Each structure stands twice: as structure tokens, then as C-alpha cells.
Image (cartoon, rainbow, N blue to C red):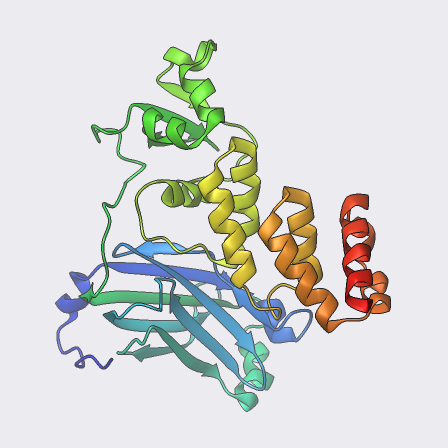
Length: 317
């Protein structure tokens, strides 16, 4: 929907805002994938991410990951900047004053792509997407927003130390979802009475994203995050995280993740629904020879290979 143009800077100063930045120098050089995706951030109680895609032109998109099947709207002012991360010199900046529920801008046309490297001789380029929510979203059921950095929140009673940072959580909420945390917090372990507990070999951002799935929220799991959430859900035995991550992978298009990749994930984490859907679609589209020649085929377990073979035979019969 269209928003009025902004005549006063203080309108943006007072609006909830977010910044997404990611480097794209190899994207401009044309090597490897022609698509870059940012991680998910939360602004105004909603999850957001950005994409950069090179075709003949350089496109940059901002997406809101709220359930797009519902009727809702949000007014956003978006500023997309192409810059050199080494010295913050700006190549181009463009503003857009509407959102529906994504925005897309061409930052470089075909001719500019050819000459862009001359402006950035050290080969570094980054996209910065800054956006302001100028009017609160309507048509969305908002859940309580949890600040896991707030040690004064009365609902928090323990701090999990991850990568040197304190994440304040509720023992009861985590224990109700996870046998792992139930044992850690209330079992016969030395950590039982500690106010701070260190968790090792965990990415801080991924863990917090998992918390937003557990706690009451409207967070949508992007497929880019789904595999890491499966890892965490499996480690901490949290079924609601595993089930929602599985659904995100099921819903992902084959241009993002192939049926064979989905099957491998289903095999590794014993995801029955993903296994059934992926194997049925895979066999319906591809021949047994193509499946067998896939580089992923050899990574499947014997049980999965046998199940695939039996399904192929049933189709032939």
C-alpha cells in the first residue's frame, strides 16, 4: 500500500527501524550462486529478511515473513544502499515508500554492473537495507514480545551464557517444551541451582531464533533457518521446533532446496512427513537412474534407500 512522502525527518527518527547488511562482492563477479539471502531480524514484532539477486540487473528485495495468507498491512519506508564496507563509501542509495508485503528495487542496471567494480577497486561491496515502520501493522495478532537481554524481566529466572553473551529465559517455559532443559534445570545436576549456565557449541543468533519459536509469538520460520533450527530442536529435544522447521522445509520451493536434499534431511532427523512427501514427489518426477546418480544418493541411510527402492517398485507395478 502507498504511504505519503516524508517531509519531516523526525517521522523516521521516531519509527521502529531495522538494518540488514550483507556483502555481495562475489555476487557481482558472477561466480557461484546468483542469489544472496540475509539472516532474519525482528522489527516492530515482525520477522524480516532481505535478498540480493543478480540477473542482467542487481535486484534487492525486503520481505516480511508474517503469514501472508492473512489480511494485513504495514506502512514501511525503505532505503537500500550499495556501499563499500571497507570505508563506508556509498555507490548509490534509493528510497521506497510502500510495502505489499515485499519491496524490490533495481540498484544496478546492466551497464552499471559492468562498471561497478571500477568504483570499488578493492573488490568489496555490500548491500544495506534500512527500513522504518511508519505506521503499525494492522490485521495482525500481536503476541507479547520477549527481550532475552533484559535481566529485570520478572519472567526470567536463569541466564544461559552463549558465546559470552547472557540470554535470560524462563526455566519453566523451556522445561515444558524440552526434556533436555527439564533435566538440566530440575534434575540432579550441579546446574540446578545456578543463576548462569553456559551452553557450548551453539550460535547465539540461531538459539535466540529458536526461542522465538518456543515462546508465544507469530514468528515464521524461513527455510534458510530451518535446518539449523532442526539441529537445535534435535539437540534439546524440542518437538514444536522440529515440527515447525519440518513444515518450513516441506513448503520451500525446489529452486531453494531440492527433493533429494529434503529427503536427506528427513533421513537424518527422522522426519516422517517430509520423508513421505519428498519421496513421493521425487519418484513421480524423476527416473530411478537420475535418482541413483545424484551425489546425495550415497549419503542416504540403507533404510532410506530400501524405502525408496520399494516405493519405486510399487509405482512400476
